[in-house]
Image 1 (cartoon, rainbow, N blue to C red):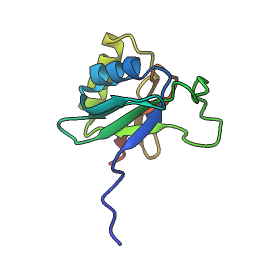
Image 2 (image 1 turned 180 degrees about the vertical axis):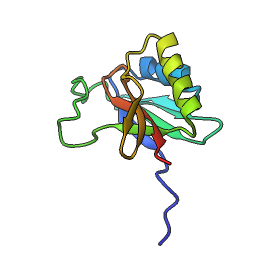
Image 3 (image 1 turned 30 degrees about the vertical axis):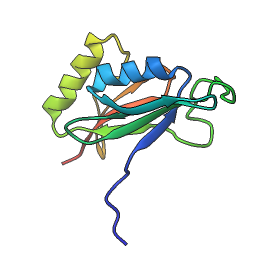
Length: 131
């Protein structure tokens, strides 16, 4: 059976409006759907060029409100691919422009990475695969 990749990523956040604005501003995403019910507030964002989709979900009643912790069982981080060293440098400049703390551009045996975090401390990376 053939797989085409991960269709979308859904993240639980503490403030869906704040997070949606943050992802729209940093990544240039647009909201494609969203709704607020008693159980969940959600926004689905899409990147117009790549088609990458991120869902943001806030659980007003049942949510713990805890900050993200990659040491807990579950997700560790999300790596967003870029196509070139110039693009990676451009993302570092964009993070600086928005005042988002990040690691330096770091070489690893399997690629080059910039690490940063969203408003709920979810670890994200811009990732350039090794040649």
